[in-house]
Image (cartoon, rainbow, N blue to C red; front, side):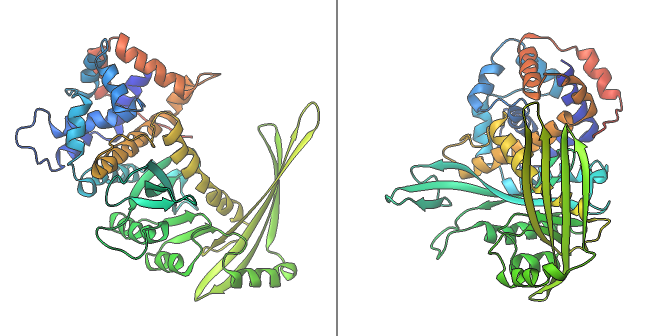
Length: 437
């Protein structure tokens, strides 16, 4: 029960106008049985409770006290998910659910919830990455990407490019979404991540025109187009730099690496029973078609002493950035660069494997519905992160108690327990302070 009340308090504390935002979304139905906010809330709730499918959520709705408890929390009727699906198939995504997500992110920025996690106490770390969602043996819609195997078999799929704010405490919050999809009609080449980034950058600039942003991205992005887009939008960047990428830059690095001086430092510390040694070196002032870049590198050696033997793990990381690198900031820059992995781990991996079932076909027949379910999932994940990463929730996950176990218990209570209406009313009047590590 504690977790259910925490979710209620989190929504009430951070997003008191959430349901009003939902009612601002245009609804083309003439005589709806359910308010548009009831439809959207039910769809988000499916992901909040990590049900994994519409059918699973329908089964729980029909069980025990689930619907009664739901009404006490959200003060709304709970429609059948088939009813929700019919609306989700026609609901506008860009001006609807994505705009709703944007309003929620802007609330967090206005409340300065994420400010303590900024790079150099200034830049928000916007990580860019793409992922595959669903695939079909036959064409799903006219926007499907296609891939032909050596045997000639064609696979049809949908991919998405995401920008997420990533933070050292584990936040991986979706701020903008761009679909990698083929256009209507004839085209010469399929859409790709690089093309989608141009569109995504326009969206981000429109949504957050004055926000100080540092873009972190993988080894696909060190190129003139990416550098130019960031410069035009007044964004800084840190990108993974792989061997073979930008040969002219690597030529400069190899030429001056051995004669550089005073551009290195090291650190040693113990963490979780491991001894960690890191060595940093950087080379500033590298010109690449008018863009001034700094190459920097980190070699990490992790030593773990076990009862039987000493385990040693060596890792190397290389990046390019337009930010100034110095002895007093190279460690923070490297940490920001390595946070890029959070979009894959705390972001996509969590959404695929830890209850949200990102790659499930929530709609097999509608491309628009697929996009709308995706946005509802991102909104639910945003809310759940505010709960899971709070100090209160961490108190509940002591010892061997996991987040997965807490959600399982919460669903059990929703079905078999009875929420106290008076308690919920009292909590709605209380102002709370949520702390994040």
